[in-house]
Length: 328
Image (cartoon, rainbow, N blue to C red; front, side, top):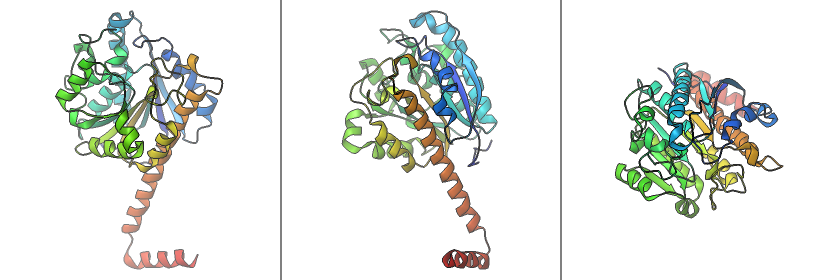
Protein backbone atom coordinates (compact mmCIF):
# COMPACT_ATOMS: atom_id res chain seq x y z
CA UNK A 1 0.00 0.00 0.00
CA UNK A 2 1.28 3.48 -0.95
CA UNK A 3 0.31 6.64 0.95
CA UNK A 4 -1.26 9.49 -1.01
CA UNK A 5 1.13 12.02 -2.58
CA UNK A 6 -1.36 13.68 -4.94
CA UNK A 7 -1.32 17.40 -4.20
CA UNK A 8 -4.59 17.99 -6.08
CA UNK A 9 -6.50 14.99 -4.73
CA UNK A 10 -10.19 15.39 -3.90
CA UNK A 11 -10.84 15.43 -0.17
CA UNK A 12 -13.07 12.49 0.75
CA UNK A 13 -15.41 13.31 3.66
CA UNK A 14 -17.05 10.70 5.86
CA UNK A 15 -19.65 12.02 8.27
CA UNK A 16 -20.66 10.30 11.49
CA UNK A 17 -24.09 11.34 12.75
CA UNK A 18 -23.52 10.17 16.33
CA UNK A 19 -24.47 11.92 19.57
CA UNK A 20 -25.88 9.50 22.15
CA UNK A 21 -22.42 8.84 23.61
CA UNK A 22 -22.01 12.51 24.56
CA UNK A 23 -23.06 14.43 27.63
CA UNK A 24 -25.40 16.58 25.54
CA UNK A 25 -27.46 15.39 22.60
CA UNK A 26 -27.09 17.36 19.38
CA UNK A 27 -23.70 16.45 17.90
CA UNK A 28 -25.52 13.88 15.77
CA UNK A 29 -26.78 16.81 13.67
CA UNK A 30 -23.32 18.17 12.86
CA UNK A 31 -22.53 16.05 9.80
CA UNK A 32 -25.77 16.99 8.05
CA UNK A 33 -25.41 20.66 8.97
CA UNK A 34 -21.86 20.70 7.59
CA UNK A 35 -22.91 18.86 4.43
CA UNK A 36 -25.37 21.70 3.76
CA UNK A 37 -23.03 24.44 4.99
CA UNK A 38 -22.55 27.30 2.54
CA UNK A 39 -19.22 28.00 4.20
CA UNK A 40 -17.98 24.48 3.48
CA UNK A 41 -19.39 24.57 -0.05
CA UNK A 42 -17.35 27.74 -0.66
CA UNK A 43 -14.23 26.15 0.82
CA UNK A 44 -11.28 26.27 -1.59
CA UNK A 45 -10.47 22.61 -0.90
CA UNK A 46 -12.20 20.38 -3.51
CA UNK A 47 -14.16 17.75 -1.62
CA UNK A 48 -16.73 15.03 -1.94
CA UNK A 49 -18.96 13.42 0.68
CA UNK A 50 -18.18 9.71 0.66
CA UNK A 51 -20.94 8.78 3.12
CA UNK A 52 -22.63 9.68 6.39
CA UNK A 53 -22.75 6.86 8.92
CA UNK A 54 -26.05 7.02 10.77
CA UNK A 55 -26.54 6.45 14.48
CA UNK A 56 -28.05 3.24 15.91
CA UNK A 57 -29.36 4.34 19.33
CA UNK A 58 -29.62 1.66 21.98
CA UNK A 59 -29.82 3.88 25.05
CA UNK A 60 -27.80 6.47 26.91
CA UNK A 61 -24.59 6.26 28.92
CA UNK A 62 -23.43 2.63 29.15
CA UNK A 63 -26.75 1.59 27.63
CA UNK A 64 -25.46 3.12 24.41
CA UNK A 65 -22.68 0.52 24.09
CA UNK A 66 -24.45 -1.89 21.69
CA UNK A 67 -25.46 0.89 19.33
CA UNK A 68 -22.09 2.65 19.55
CA UNK A 69 -20.33 -0.62 18.71
CA UNK A 70 -22.43 -1.04 15.57
CA UNK A 71 -21.85 2.55 14.45
CA UNK A 72 -18.10 2.48 15.11
CA UNK A 73 -17.67 -0.75 13.19
CA UNK A 74 -19.54 0.75 10.22
CA UNK A 75 -17.41 3.90 10.44
CA UNK A 76 -14.20 1.85 10.66
CA UNK A 77 -15.15 -0.02 7.51
CA UNK A 78 -15.60 3.31 5.72
CA UNK A 79 -12.28 4.77 6.88
CA UNK A 80 -10.35 1.56 6.21
CA UNK A 81 -11.78 1.46 2.69
CA UNK A 82 -10.84 5.09 2.08
CA UNK A 83 -7.24 4.56 3.22
CA UNK A 84 -6.88 1.38 1.15
CA UNK A 85 -8.20 3.32 -1.86
CA UNK A 86 -5.52 5.98 -1.24
CA UNK A 87 -8.16 8.65 -0.59
CA UNK A 88 -7.50 11.94 1.22
CA UNK A 89 -9.67 11.31 4.29
CA UNK A 90 -11.59 13.68 6.57
CA UNK A 91 -14.08 12.50 9.18
CA UNK A 92 -16.65 14.93 10.58
CA UNK A 93 -18.47 13.86 13.75
CA UNK A 94 -20.42 13.58 15.88
CA UNK A 95 -19.42 13.13 19.48
CA UNK A 96 -15.84 12.01 20.11
CA UNK A 97 -16.73 8.33 20.46
CA UNK A 98 -16.50 8.32 16.65
CA UNK A 99 -12.71 8.37 17.07
CA UNK A 100 -12.90 4.68 17.96
CA UNK A 101 -14.24 3.88 14.50
CA UNK A 102 -12.22 6.48 12.61
CA UNK A 103 -8.81 5.44 13.87
CA UNK A 104 -9.55 1.71 14.13
CA UNK A 105 -10.23 1.68 10.41
CA UNK A 106 -7.23 3.86 9.56
CA UNK A 107 -4.85 1.85 11.76
CA UNK A 108 -5.95 -1.53 10.39
CA UNK A 109 -5.66 -0.29 6.80
CA UNK A 110 -2.15 1.03 7.49
CA UNK A 111 -0.82 -2.12 9.18
CA UNK A 112 0.78 -3.43 5.99
CA UNK A 113 3.05 -0.37 5.85
CA UNK A 114 3.43 0.51 9.53
CA UNK A 115 1.88 1.94 12.67
CA UNK A 116 -0.36 4.97 13.04
CA UNK A 117 0.70 8.13 14.86
CA UNK A 118 -2.03 10.31 16.36
CA UNK A 119 -2.23 13.89 17.68
CA UNK A 120 -5.26 14.31 19.92
CA UNK A 121 -6.36 17.95 20.39
CA UNK A 122 -8.90 18.20 23.21
CA UNK A 123 -9.81 19.77 26.53
CA UNK A 124 -10.29 16.26 27.94
CA UNK A 125 -8.20 13.09 28.16
CA UNK A 126 -11.05 10.85 26.95
CA UNK A 127 -9.20 7.95 28.58
CA UNK A 128 -11.91 6.40 30.74
CA UNK A 129 -13.10 2.82 30.41
CA UNK A 130 -16.65 1.64 31.20
CA UNK A 131 -15.34 0.53 34.60
CA UNK A 132 -13.67 3.83 35.53
CA UNK A 133 -16.26 6.32 34.27
CA UNK A 134 -18.76 7.79 36.73
CA UNK A 135 -21.03 9.10 33.96
CA UNK A 136 -20.84 6.19 31.51
CA UNK A 137 -20.57 8.68 28.63
CA UNK A 138 -18.65 6.82 25.92
CA UNK A 139 -17.37 10.03 24.29
CA UNK A 140 -15.01 10.16 27.29
CA UNK A 141 -13.51 6.74 26.46
CA UNK A 142 -12.05 6.64 22.92
CA UNK A 143 -8.37 7.08 23.88
CA UNK A 144 -8.46 4.13 26.26
CA UNK A 145 -10.11 1.90 23.68
CA UNK A 146 -7.69 2.86 20.91
CA UNK A 147 -4.87 1.94 23.30
CA UNK A 148 -6.47 -1.49 23.86
CA UNK A 149 -8.34 -0.98 27.16
CA UNK A 150 -12.06 -1.16 27.92
CA UNK A 151 -15.00 -2.84 26.22
CA UNK A 152 -14.01 -5.79 24.05
CA UNK A 153 -16.45 -4.87 21.30
CA UNK A 154 -14.96 -1.38 20.95
CA UNK A 155 -11.28 -2.21 21.30
CA UNK A 156 -11.40 -5.12 18.85
CA UNK A 157 -13.01 -3.41 15.87
CA UNK A 158 -11.69 -4.98 12.61
CA UNK A 159 -8.86 -6.74 14.48
CA UNK A 160 -7.77 -7.67 18.01
CA UNK A 161 -4.71 -5.43 18.22
CA UNK A 162 -4.45 -1.99 19.89
CA UNK A 163 -4.97 0.66 17.24
CA UNK A 164 -2.43 3.16 18.59
CA UNK A 165 0.72 2.42 20.54
CA UNK A 166 1.32 4.74 23.52
CA UNK A 167 4.60 6.10 22.16
CA UNK A 168 2.79 7.12 18.96
CA UNK A 169 0.12 9.22 20.69
CA UNK A 170 0.24 12.82 21.94
CA UNK A 171 -2.57 14.71 23.66
CA UNK A 172 -2.60 18.52 23.31
CA UNK A 173 -4.53 21.16 25.26
CA UNK A 174 -5.64 18.96 28.16
CA UNK A 175 -7.19 20.76 31.14
CA UNK A 176 -10.03 18.52 32.37
CA UNK A 177 -9.62 14.92 33.52
CA UNK A 178 -10.20 12.45 36.36
CA UNK A 179 -7.53 10.49 38.28
CA UNK A 180 -8.17 7.09 36.58
CA UNK A 181 -7.55 8.64 33.16
CA UNK A 182 -4.30 10.27 34.20
CA UNK A 183 -3.15 7.08 35.91
CA UNK A 184 -3.77 4.99 32.78
CA UNK A 185 -1.95 7.39 30.45
CA UNK A 186 0.99 7.84 32.83
CA UNK A 187 1.29 4.07 33.29
CA UNK A 188 1.36 3.57 29.51
CA UNK A 189 3.79 6.43 28.88
CA UNK A 190 1.53 8.60 26.70
CA UNK A 191 2.82 12.15 26.21
CA UNK A 192 0.31 14.74 27.42
CA UNK A 193 0.76 18.45 26.70
CA UNK A 194 -1.39 20.08 29.37
CA UNK A 195 -2.81 23.52 28.76
CA UNK A 196 -0.33 25.07 31.18
CA UNK A 197 2.51 23.87 28.96
CA UNK A 198 0.75 25.14 25.83
CA UNK A 199 0.39 28.58 27.43
CA UNK A 200 4.04 28.60 28.46
CA UNK A 201 5.60 27.38 25.21
CA UNK A 202 3.04 28.42 22.61
CA UNK A 203 0.87 26.16 20.48
CA UNK A 204 3.24 26.23 17.50
CA UNK A 205 6.12 24.81 19.54
CA UNK A 206 3.92 22.19 21.20
CA UNK A 207 2.34 21.02 17.93
CA UNK A 208 5.76 20.83 16.34
CA UNK A 209 7.01 18.52 19.08
CA UNK A 210 3.80 16.48 18.99
CA UNK A 211 4.12 15.96 15.25
CA UNK A 212 7.77 14.95 15.60
CA UNK A 213 6.93 12.43 18.34
CA UNK A 214 4.05 10.73 16.51
CA UNK A 215 6.10 10.43 13.30
CA UNK A 216 9.27 8.89 14.77
CA UNK A 217 8.36 5.27 14.03
CA UNK A 218 5.08 5.38 12.12
CA UNK A 219 3.85 5.12 8.54
CA UNK A 220 1.88 8.35 8.88
CA UNK A 221 -0.07 10.38 11.38
CA UNK A 222 -3.58 11.63 11.96
CA UNK A 223 -5.15 14.48 13.89
CA UNK A 224 -8.27 14.09 16.00
CA UNK A 225 -9.52 17.59 16.81
CA UNK A 226 -12.25 18.08 19.39
CA UNK A 227 -13.29 21.71 19.06
CA UNK A 228 -13.82 21.96 22.82
CA UNK A 229 -10.02 22.01 22.94
CA UNK A 230 -10.26 25.64 21.82
CA UNK A 231 -11.19 28.66 23.88
CA UNK A 232 -14.95 28.87 24.42
CA UNK A 233 -15.07 32.23 22.63
CA UNK A 234 -13.67 30.52 19.51
CA UNK A 235 -15.83 27.39 19.76
CA UNK A 236 -19.03 28.09 21.72
CA UNK A 237 -21.03 25.26 20.12
CA UNK A 238 -19.82 22.31 22.21
CA UNK A 239 -21.48 20.14 24.83
CA UNK A 240 -18.60 20.02 27.32
CA UNK A 241 -16.98 23.49 27.32
CA UNK A 242 -13.90 24.13 29.46
CA UNK A 243 -12.45 27.56 30.17
CA UNK A 244 -8.93 28.53 29.17
CA UNK A 245 -8.53 26.64 25.91
CA UNK A 246 -6.26 26.93 22.87
CA UNK A 247 -6.47 30.18 20.96
CA UNK A 248 -7.96 29.14 17.62
CA UNK A 249 -6.21 31.85 15.62
CA UNK A 250 -2.83 30.82 17.03
CA UNK A 251 -3.62 27.17 16.23
CA UNK A 252 -4.56 28.01 12.64
CA UNK A 253 -1.32 29.98 12.28
CA UNK A 254 0.65 27.04 13.70
CA UNK A 255 -0.71 24.48 11.23
CA UNK A 256 1.27 25.68 8.16
CA UNK A 257 4.49 25.29 10.16
CA UNK A 258 3.90 21.53 10.52
CA UNK A 259 5.08 19.00 7.96
CA UNK A 260 1.74 17.62 6.75
CA UNK A 261 3.03 15.44 3.93
CA UNK A 262 2.51 12.23 5.96
CA UNK A 263 -0.92 13.24 7.28
CA UNK A 264 -3.17 10.27 6.51
CA UNK A 265 -6.47 11.54 7.94
CA UNK A 266 -8.09 14.27 10.02
CA UNK A 267 -11.11 14.07 12.29
CA UNK A 268 -13.06 17.07 13.66
CA UNK A 269 -15.67 16.39 16.31
CA UNK A 270 -18.03 17.64 19.04
CA UNK A 271 -19.59 20.46 17.01
CA UNK A 272 -23.09 20.94 18.42
CA UNK A 273 -24.92 23.13 15.87
CA UNK A 274 -27.84 24.15 18.10
CA UNK A 275 -25.38 25.83 20.48
CA UNK A 276 -23.67 27.96 17.83
CA UNK A 277 -23.98 31.75 17.97
CA UNK A 278 -25.53 34.08 15.41
CA UNK A 279 -22.17 34.45 13.65
CA UNK A 280 -21.86 30.64 13.33
CA UNK A 281 -18.47 30.93 14.99
CA UNK A 282 -18.00 27.20 15.56
CA UNK A 283 -19.09 26.23 12.06
CA UNK A 284 -16.65 28.77 10.67
CA UNK A 285 -13.86 27.33 12.82
CA UNK A 286 -14.50 23.81 11.49
CA UNK A 287 -14.29 25.08 7.90
CA UNK A 288 -11.17 27.14 8.64
CA UNK A 289 -9.49 24.07 10.12
CA UNK A 290 -10.30 21.98 7.04
CA UNK A 291 -9.09 24.66 4.66
CA UNK A 292 -5.86 25.39 6.52
CA UNK A 293 -4.89 21.75 7.05
CA UNK A 294 -5.45 20.63 3.48
CA UNK A 295 -4.17 23.79 1.77
CA UNK A 296 -0.98 23.33 3.79
CA UNK A 297 -0.65 19.66 2.87
CA UNK A 298 -1.33 20.32 -0.81
CA UNK A 299 1.23 23.14 -0.97
CA UNK A 300 3.89 21.07 0.79
CA UNK A 301 3.35 18.06 -1.46
CA UNK A 302 3.47 20.20 -4.60
CA UNK A 303 6.63 21.96 -3.44
CA UNK A 304 8.27 18.66 -2.55
CA UNK A 305 7.38 17.20 -5.94
CA UNK A 306 8.80 20.23 -7.76
CA UNK A 307 12.06 19.87 -5.85
CA UNK A 308 12.26 16.17 -6.69
CA UNK A 309 11.54 16.94 -10.36
CA UNK A 310 14.38 19.47 -10.44
CA UNK A 311 16.77 17.00 -8.80
CA UNK A 312 16.04 14.53 -11.60
CA UNK A 313 16.96 17.00 -14.35
CA UNK A 314 20.29 16.56 -16.17
CA UNK A 315 22.76 19.20 -15.01
CA UNK A 316 22.73 21.14 -18.32
CA UNK A 317 18.91 21.39 -18.26
CA UNK A 318 19.00 22.52 -14.64
CA UNK A 319 21.55 25.24 -15.49
CA UNK A 320 19.40 26.41 -18.41
CA UNK A 321 16.31 26.53 -16.18
CA UNK A 322 18.14 28.57 -13.55
CA UNK A 323 19.29 31.01 -16.23
CA UNK A 324 15.73 31.42 -17.50
CA UNK A 325 14.49 32.08 -13.97
CA UNK A 326 17.24 34.67 -13.41
CA UNK A 327 16.48 36.47 -16.70
CA UNK A 328 12.80 36.77 -15.76
